[in-house]
Image 1 (cartoon, rainbow, N blue to C red):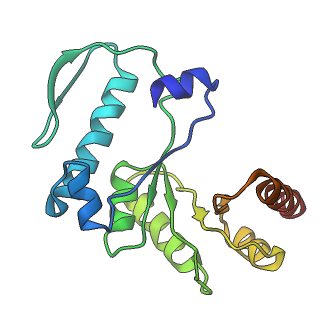
Image 2: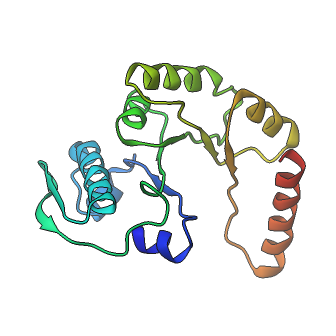
Length: 183
């Protein structure tokens, strides 16, 4: 991630999620029951590596002594860690080690305002500033996007299915026009 941030001139957004799919977690070498602890420690360890010339980390799943790693990220202190999810403890995780929250808006008709308000109350109690929200699988109609924007959503990420170039480019052009319209 640090290399991508460096090469992109500080434009990397680092989205993370603990995963809901047991088989997928196993394929990645992580026991499903320990995925949250693994994710937290790996993020904490990356932040140490990104922000220190000599990094050390001690945890249950991640453990290393005095390592050096370059390049460092361009963005300071590091690329934003965007924590995805909507589970019962997601907001706690965002406050603990995330820089932004990214719920999945696919099929959601409800507002995210109540959860965004709760997130920021939790952040304030933890001595943190306001934590922004991005929507994954953002709706593709202007009225819904305007409503989310007024409620405080910072960024909308659209899903674009794989397709041939002739089908894909017009779809991307339409989404770009929608993004310009809503701002």
